[in-house]
Length: 227
Image (cartoon, rainbow, N blue to C red; front, top):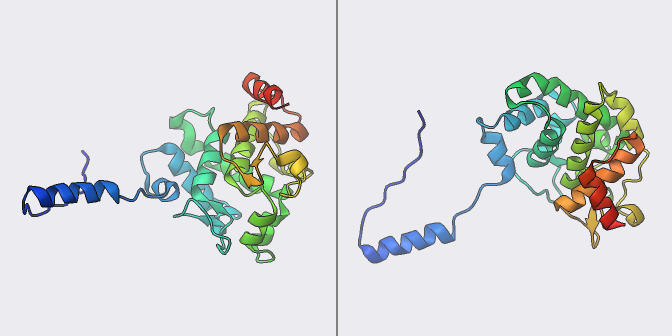
């Protein structure tokens, strides 16, 4: 029930076939994670992430669908791959067959927490450039979005959160890159945002604090090791 693309080459001898084999394997270009998610109709998390981006007034204008990294001049604030990872963390307690029923949950989450991140809406409405926000703040980077998704999952486990209230409380944190006292060693390593799971966990621990959410045993272990 499946099809694959096939390319045929003329057989012009063993040496040429060997060279073609070497070239194809040496110079093959792996597609970006974002475009893989955009075209993936088998993974329910990918389908939900795309549906949330399309439904969200905030996200639909600021998400880059094809690239995994954003240049300073890009007009997009988030990558689809970052939204996918964060949303998968948010809905990780939901059974795969029930994911399509939670698009509204994800949309409400993103639009609600944006109350605490005025810069996101400033980019959408043209008052700030995406490059300026990514340069000066860390809250649009994948590591932080992943941490926000994990904290959102913990909030969902406790009931029906008021996402706007959650966003307001998150907005009380100082998200500037210059706030190295908080973010260096957590979201950042040597001044650069790090994507390691250890950094995601340490960032999650900071995000949970203003929300009054308990750390999991693993998060507590990582926190104690950090301290």
